[in-house]
Image 1: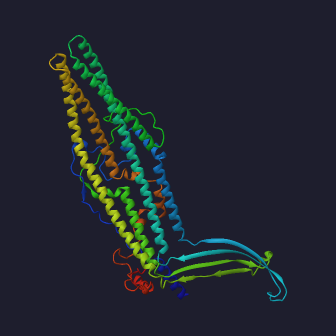
Image 2: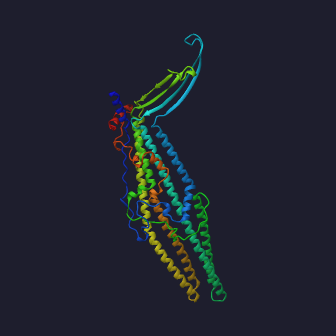
Image 3: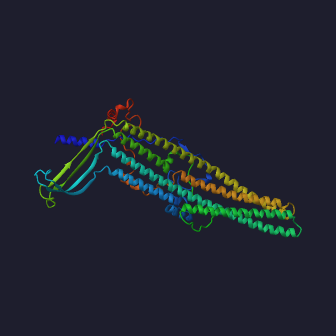
Length: 525
């Protein structure tokens, strides 16, 4: 009894072993803060980071919200990303199923005629056999965590795929918003061109009457006609761009674009909210889905090292069945017809030509690749946020200067028209002033569009709405593993560096000697 207890305790301790290196998140290879002080004119409308609002709060325009919601339902790229998540979740389920025994019920029967020279009695006879059994398929005792490591790697791949879906959703929201703002901007430029054309049409009617009365020259008339045709060309250009913008928006939405009310970019209902302070800590970047995806891939590669290490150790598989058997179908469940079988097997790698060592080296190299990928992703994210914050400051200054330019050119046009009507100047001064005003107004719309698009880019570069946009599918995985803390560590006391078994020297050394090296490094339980 004591012996059996000791064996059970030993098996229990072995079952708790793991050869997965301790996971440690790489340090962020960037400065501690991102962004510098900005003008107070574009400051906190919303609470400070690290929590940004969801897109419904960030983008208050009801028309835009309807477009985003439709795009999230219909966009094919996002739909493919969701299917990729479902595929990864199914793969995770397949790997996780290996942790549990597989049971199956089977029934069989056979009849066989034996000729006289093969039967023990010297007479030909017919032999029959029937059986029903409950069988245990080949079940691996996961003493060294190989199966658990593969299951953990599949889980991390699933979570990485979910973060890729979240990134695709964030990109789609940003692209729909940018396309919507571009449509509003081009529509506003179209209105400006139409107003300029109407003003120029009234001006040419006036100049024609002055020309017929001898108060203006033919040159004035022809210059006015040039200005009119220029305004018409501008109107046609922006009408084309508005149509193009609608088509682009329809592709993103995944269907026909509804009739939209064209609004000015300065309308508070259109303006995306802002509220990001200066000098953000670099740790806020870890909320970005692409960085979270890179970390999950790193965790997966780290778990695969445990599976590669476990290949150096014995693998024990259990196969058995219990049931009933009889030579007659009617006696299948009679007393004494019970039957059982138990067939454990043990496999210990002795020589594999260095395959196991090569697999371990490959797993470690892939882990190191994922570290570099994670660091590159963080650096790219840092640059995106820094560039966006820097641009915000200068765009605000540029918008103020452009507004002042519009006011100055409008005043210049008024003065030029007054001087022309008094006969002091020719129409060329009016033409130049009107052209300058048209360019200044349209450029102001472009700068305002850049400012609003910058807010959308900042929202995207900071990872969107944080917990407000928590994906629905990923919650299942977190629930299955008992919360986020279960994902931390696949833990063992092995260090990530310097703990792999080495196999330098002759390849004839094989894998058997490497087992001793790994065993010396393995945790006790």
